[in-house]
Image (tube, rainbow, N blue to C red; front, side, top):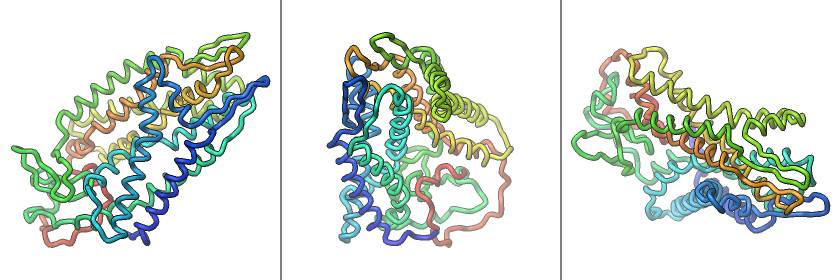
Length: 402
């Protein structure tokens, strides 16, 4: 493994720059909309607060969490941790912060929101003139910086500085599964730990609670998937937004919005919406159902393929939030009274719930069950207690094998 050069300085500089970009994106107009002599400009907080009225308060809370609160929490912890290391000090509650960094990363969706903004602009470009404020460009910079930070934060280095990796238990042997030796890998810091069935077990390095296998993992995943399927029907059939003007009032469903874009010749945007709102949710539901069914049966056929399918499923789920962000932005921006206005409809609640529930379902599924179902012959029984610890990517120990 190649260690990044000056990992603390690089991550700290990027995190401070990202905070400045985010604060700037909140302080100025984000985007403006003008039609027939009337103009409206909104800030980024307006776009996030649109759904906070009426029955959409829970969805608005989700938007605030994934677009503002979690990124700020993430950046704050990155700054505190790396500043402490540069000063030669141990960061306060450092173990807790490092564990939290891993858990919240998947829920930050600034990049998905930016794609939603671009899709929204294409939808209304033929109706009005669009202007970009200072905040829009600051937010674009923020998205780029967040992507760079996710690559620059060296978790293995952070854990080794915080708490050097301990040697594996003396009785650990290669060629045998961890489960058969009552060993379990920490999903956060990758440390190999002894596991005791009769009491709660915690990682001896980072303090994360450990499970040999997540209790009722398949049952919880299937329950979440069934609820998602039931919600997906109203998500596709109920309108997600209403567009009103002097001459007409129309409601749009998810599929209706795709067909409207096709009729206007916006084929690339129609393809993005169809992929994010129809293909990805359905594919994710089918993939997770299939994985849940397969783990209950011995299947020696290529578990690494099913592992890859799980990782893809876990990664793509959040991109379905594009349609939710599109509706939130249009409902905030297009408010010109009787001349033209857009309002959110109940379908968007059902759709947003489907996206969130399928993300939780993917996290509830224990990928180690994939390897349990595979028929692996035992290899030679070698002693690993004398081997020096090898750097591992944080969070891989739990899903790379049994």
